[in-house]
Length: 401
Image (cartoon, rainbow, N blue to C red; front, side, top):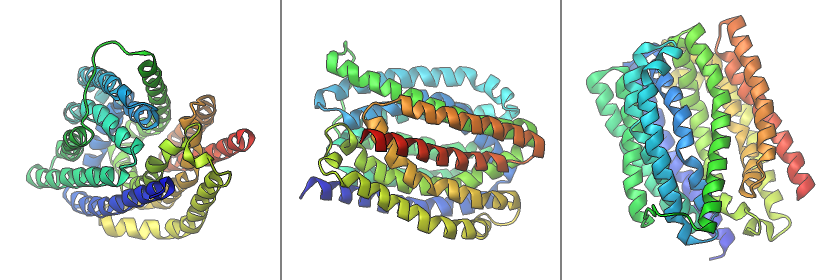
């Protein structure tokens, strides 16, 4: 089987896996939104955002480094770095849980933050064997693992929500999923952790992972500014509506586009197979652009009634966010392939420029949230930032080839 067919098959398997997981997610959202009110989801959103900001520094970028690494013997060094940073990040998250909850204007969120901190080392370390499987073309197997673990997490999480019906019960699903994923991925990739000093090539890949982590942190920081403003000045219930619009509309669409990105990313590094033919990468971008162009108008029109049907009564504010959330979820179909080729080649000045412009939109969103007492500007800012990113990446890719 050719490398192109392997990549396409992996992307298809990941997409199918994510579609199955999406069905579970919608079912999970339908049940939990009827068991808990928007303020409970607001507390959960505070916990996710507060801990997520620390968790992003803990090693997701090491998975990208493993996916692009030219040698297998650097994986142990990457795993060691991910484990150390993950443990330090989890310790920091536990220490800061109470003050973070107070800063977010939701003091009751600290127990949920403590529970979510458990998943930080697991998620950090699991990213490395996941990257190894992507690099070796085993994306179909990776899709099976991740889809199964997420389904198990949601099943266990739903049982806990049914039993306790409290905000902290919502944290069980992601924690269980991350622990199952770490165990399964470590066995699948035969992961080992090398704690002794890094050799030269291993050090280069670790430094790449640190840069990727830093970029992910900056991106998350701009998104968190809007969520923090909503939590403190609009209210936990509005943050809960914002969280549900993200989880039910944006997250499933992002999962689909990440399927293609996860399979293609190793091919986009310098000398990768995507650039052995002059038209391959162009064809990828054109295809994704057509997907976004055709689906966005349909999704914008259908998002609000579909969200209302899934969540049930009491979520009218979330429905007003749904059309913009649909656009925010579909535009990355164009942005992600463009950003992936830039980051796979290590050109981080371009993503930094994109982030700076996105940060300007985020500041404008914060001002608009305070002015209009509504979470809507936060979603609008995501759409505007993604459009700006598409323009920046397109210009850079066209100039450099």
